[in-house]
Length: 120
Image (cartoon, rainbow, N blue to C red; front, side):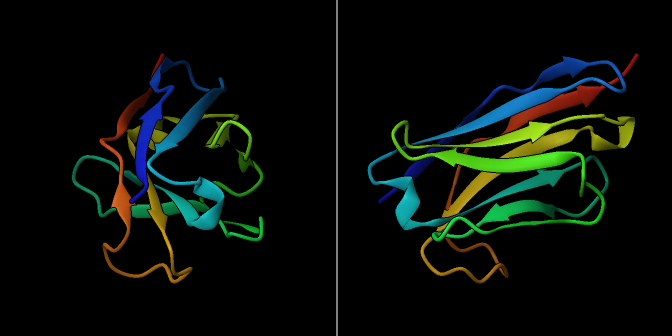
């Protein structure tokens, strides 16, 4: 079973950029649909970006044109490039890998999360 591990979070000023990584062990990540979720304090979990097994990407309106999801099959890693970051992007970001490309519920394998803080 695939096990995702996130990295790359940190503190960044508004307008800055970060790249999150979701490295996988146990299985090839390109066999799964992969999504990036975030949960901010006091808010519901939000699916911000996802990539299908075929490589098609989708984004939440809140991050469209600022975030880019991509994958490197050779490195068995999915990335989330985050540009023009805003304070409201502050959250714990989680990587999820699921075999069926249907994004409801808590199915699939979850990473432990990585904190992103956008603040001056």
